Length: 91
Image 1 (cartoon, rainbow, N blue to C red):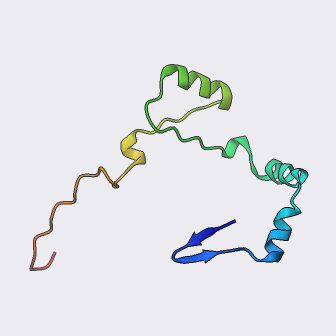
Image 2 (cartoon, rainbow, N blue to C red):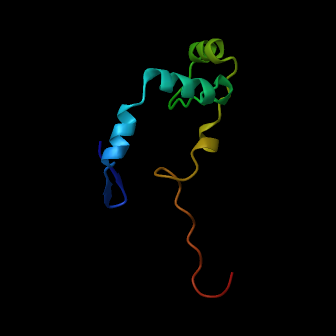
Image 3 (tube, rainbow, N blue to C red):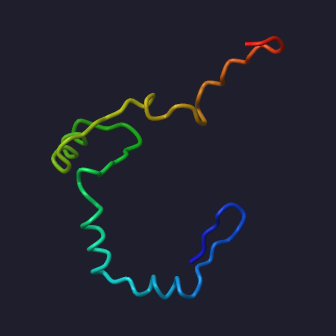
């Protein structure tokens, strides 16, 4: 088990590993039943969604909200560069 946070490696200690190894299937199911509720589910699909996809999702989850790409992705790699501000003077 190895993760990084910033530039420092995080390695769980012996007690952490022992606690993780004691987790049972029943523990995972109990926690999943308490916290993983269908009404809190969010499914993200990247790419085009077909009418067939939409029908299958509605059948599986009850309702589907599709957000336009422009509302989901603002900025980032393919964003238009911001207009340069004039130098000098006050805004």
